[in-house]
Length: 138
Image 1 (cartoon, rainbow, N blue to C red):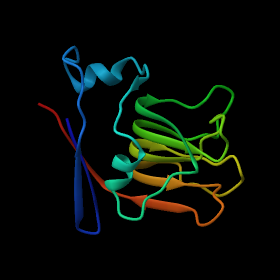
Image 2 (tube, rainbow, N blue to C red):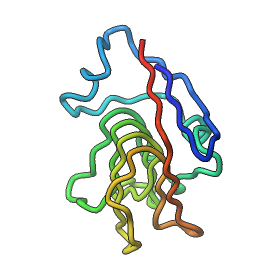
Image 3 (cartoon, one colour):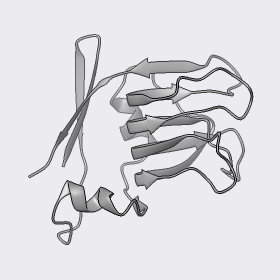
Image 4 (tube, one colour):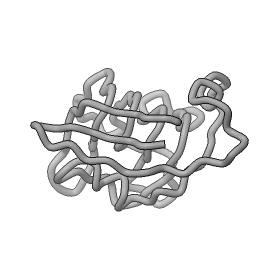
């Protein structure tokens, strides 16, 4: 699978390897079960110039749903989440596709970021970088 993001005419891609048992992208997402990927934070961040996550990178993969009892936390269909707390119980940042972000620190947040990088509750600047996303599957 090839993932790409374009911001201001800068297009970047990374390759994501999946197991042979995956028959389609739809099958990965239909049941909304979490499936871990192993790109790592540096690869996710390489898709968007000047992107970032909060200090603790929590999870990466498909179907990163909100943490139980945290309706204001970030979630993403395919990507990586981050949090300012090591326990990762209230992620306020993500890089990925199909993201929905909120903030546990009271910072205003857009309802939906279809593709890109959203960061709230950081020691320094918050980020909202919207991207055009590409997902190529063979």
